[in-house]
Length: 314
Image (cartoon, rainbow, N blue to C red; front, side, top):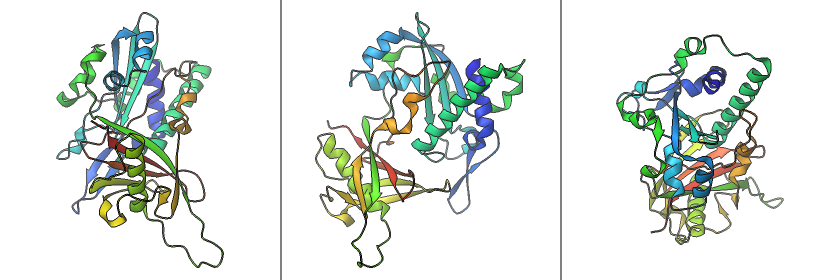
C-alpha cells in the first residue's frame, strides 16, 4: 500500500509518466498527458533476498532473475492508448522481508537519466509522506485514476508468485555507459563544426563491442535515440559506413569519450522505507537490433551520456 500512495503522488507531480503515446498523421509521435497512469503490480518471489543477491553475481543467471522483477510489454503501435509507458513491480522476497522495485519505461517517454530523476522524486515523496503521516484514508479510491488493469499482453505481471528461474531475459545484450565531452579547438582555428550525434553513436557502439570482446566492427545500421534539453526526443538511423571502420578510439563527432558508471544516475543512494538498495542493475533492451545508442544531455557545457547497447558475444 505504501508504494501505491507515494507513487501515485509522484506521478501526479510528473504527469508525463502517466501519459500515453499518440501518433500524428505525418508519422511522428507525442506523449499525451491523459492521466492514464503507470502500470503497477505486486508479486512475491519464490526465493529469499539472500538467494537473489547471490544469483545477481552470476552473469549467466542474473538477467533472467532480473527480468522477472521488471516486467514490460511493448507499446501497441496500432492502439497506443491501451499501452502504459511505465511499469512498476513491487516484489517481496520470501522469509526475510526484503523487497525489489522493478521499473521499466519506454524510450519514447524518458531517457535513463530522466527516469532516475523521477525515481528519486518518488523516494522523496515517500519520505515526506512518511514523515508527515500523510497517508490517505482511502488511497485506492483517491488514486484509482493512476492505475489501470493490465491487459492480456501483460498477463505475466499479474502473477502472485514469481519463479525467478522461469523467466528468460528479453535480449541477450549488454549496455555500456559513456560520458561524451565536446572537444575544444585550438585558438584561432575558427568556428567549430556542429557536434555530430551519429558519429558519436558509432564510436560508442564500437567501444562497447570492443569492451565486451567482440571487436570494433559496428553493425551497418542501428537506431539512435537522441534526447534534447527541452525533453524532446528523436529517433534516427546511424549508417556506420559513413564514419569508417573501425571508428576513432578516442571519440567521434567532435566529442571525447570516456566510460561512465551507472552509479552516476544516483539510484544507489535512493531510499525507500528507510533502506538503500543492496543491488541495482540497469539495462536497455535493443529489440533484437545489432546495436542501439541513446544520447541524453548531462550537465553543462554540452556534455552527454550515451548508453550503447550491443549483443553479447556468442
